[in-house]
Length: 482
Image (cartoon, rainbow, N blue to C red; front, top):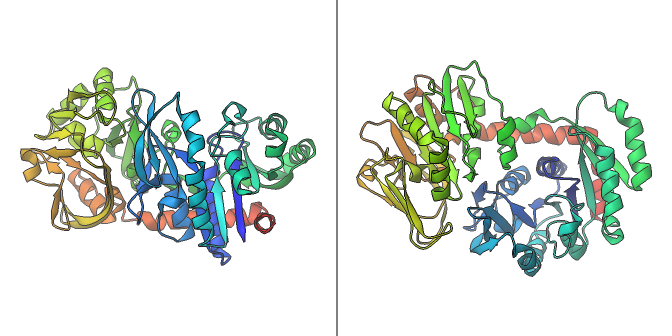
């Protein structure tokens, strides 16, 4: 058959979720479907079955399709790190580092890699559902583009434009996109979707008709606000600004939001726990004294984030929390920060350098060697679990003699002598109901016992069902055969 691409009038209009929902809806209709995003920028990533990494959104979309994760689903991934640079991942592997000044030149050279992945996926399925990045209305970025119209025109993929009515100005956003983009780019757009509508959609009937008249594009539906999105893994850091948990819950868990935080979707399974009050601590806020546990998640630039932690005074707060008897869990970069020192002799994250860590674990980390990318299974706290490793660097020291987990007999992580500080390189720990329960019991609580993976599957089904009701999926399928 072919493909269809969802682009947006701006960032965070809901493209990722709509692609996931559309993928699931098409699978439920009996189609073989694959997700695709030519270029993504995110520090939330997942390990693929072919030993690489892709953006978290494409991992979720692969789950929606019921297929294994593969690097072809996101051939170019940019992971922002320190000093206005990004780690460049091509076909799942690190290719180097790009600065903000030279990426616009370098990206045009990546189009061949993007098209290679797209053609391989297209050969495996009936429909490829493609997600754009940012907006085609960013005409200042059009030259050399591989994420939106540059890809759509090179691969001849029809486009549906998504507008977010919740943020306001959706008529101007859609019609304005039509006004500013190149006519040949505009010709690729075959319709529009209005997303995140609250209330009675008949009240927007006039506005919908005006968009059709002024843009010349066909309306493909008005999608309501999707409550099920809250049960899906997070990709973009913008969600941290509006994450909501139960403020009445007795188990307070605090997580400082460092500038280069990554893979913070590790915390998402805590959404299932009614007894947990997870507080994302932003700049200028102290670590709450009532916290029973502090979680330090991953970081794309551990040394830079350690400096940021000191600048915020969170290092003092965390040490005080520990002295009061509080527990600390560090995952990946957070684990490295718990040690005595972090050194980067090869300039993996930026300038060569070193920094003192929190000193809560008797370990030292050296950022060198090949990047570890591996799905793992193991045992920790007397329970079985699965997850994945995605990190640069190696950590050694006396506390590693008390590993947190055994991964097929191989030790991972460390536990402090007082048993209150845990570090691990494994992402996805909290997705395991049994391991989540074991950790919460250490805080005097217990898990509600809900299965996180099942919760995600149910949310995808719910979103797909709503799209069947509120979007013209038949018309979208017809576009793939054009």
